Length: 445
Image (cartoon, rainbow, N blue to C red):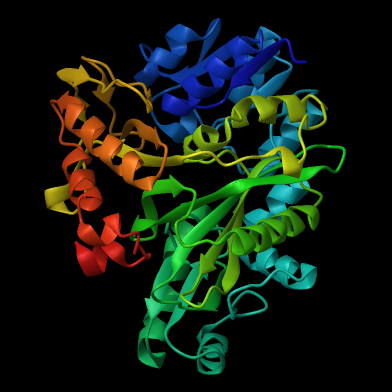
């Protein structure tokens, strides 16, 4: 097992990894920017190293400074968390060449799955169902127009290197497609440094279902059930739950085995998430694989009792999975809300500022993963997440009731938050009935 792990991240995920390391008796190193000098993850780690100014480009994305910090402190592994460098194959390779274990999959697996067009082609070759669309990247508007006619409108233009809804556009006819291609390419270049795009049929009234997998270096792969991530705004997730109310046991097994097949096709090892679209007829289609720990991983932990971050660390250290597929049991229901400092009345505008009052909900079945506290500053340099509220109930009804109680208990003053919005969502009769599709916000809110 590792002796010391450097956590190349900030906020609640840095805390999450540090806590897992403490329970495994592993020393931790926090890295921080000038803006995070007094952050909780810095105080909780055994050691901390300043890696640059507030700008993430000069700090949390500064590969040379992070590697230097690991070497100076004698860290034998780096956990990247999510975001920042977590899906950067170049960073994973530099870790390897520096004699430091990257806690994640191989650079090759990250590279294939990180390029959405390549991943899509790989899945088609592996026999995993994929959304109808282009077989390669779109080179120009003429190629896009021909494919649009072939696939059928509406179509979805997606950035090959994309994520989080960036570089994504919907076109409902050929005229819209020409503009959408240009705009998607520009945004993809701006956010990912890669203008490549591809086309898929735009599927309306679908659910977004993702499967959590764990794979060790000995070739053992299991799936730990699914999460329903259909509640989104502009292709960004707002609330997640496990299990998914739409799945039968038979469909769960079929999709889980497809997720395992996807991971095997790239010789995957570590924690990962295979994402699908599920239509009303029970047909599912691969859309992407995230080669890191997910923001919403706690809901899977609550219904399986498996600590995903600890498993990531054990796998990276070369240990085999200690359980098989038949050992995994789904118990109860879990729901997660992302609590962000955003003004939902002003188009979810990020609202940096200082938290004046902070009181977390408590009681049975309530978990809060957060760095929030009174006096904590939500910085304009990073995302607006304050933390995550996760609840567990014996069934979906109890989980919703518990979440409503916990949201009403959660007291944050000084910055606007998404708490009132989440309360509107979970008290909506359509949500309560479980009729949640990716267009729920637009149609029901």
